[in-house]
Length: 195
Image (cartoon, rainbow, N blue to C red; front, top):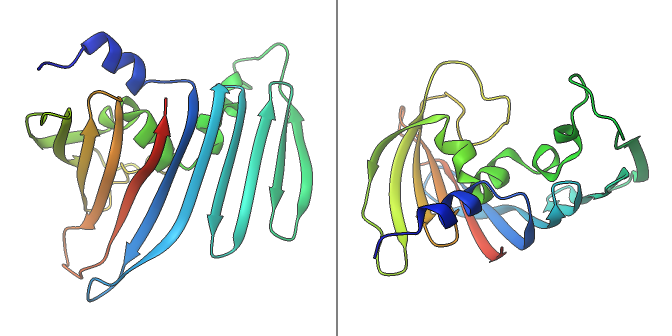
């Protein structure tokens, strides 16, 4: 069954997410994995959102109600950011206040895979299975670091991606270093998504 391309493109460049969660696991020499962080997002649209990250330092939360962004972090309490501009400018666009600017770059790329696919060279793609999941391998293009801090950093890494063509998201991603082979890598997984 061929995926609905209109639905896929709409989902793969989404601005809202009812509820999403993802985990990051890091592996060291010998392949032992440990959970490094958990991210959660609720976004009614790109300027009304709630984003939380829990890692070894504690929990950090950022929220935007469309008029102001608030942040709470371990040991810092709450602080207010600049209000969302009523009249954005070229130097201060609304994007800077969106969940896409505050969430980890890799989490944005998992929820909006078109952002990532524009910055990598796909080396192989498998046919979608009966559930609409396809396996992709890719490597970052170019030599300049990605300004988004996502998967496309050109540091010799290889990417193994799981693309859900029905939900329009990456369900998992494995980042591995090509050389030298150390057994180290990072695994990212969407654990919950209500688009």
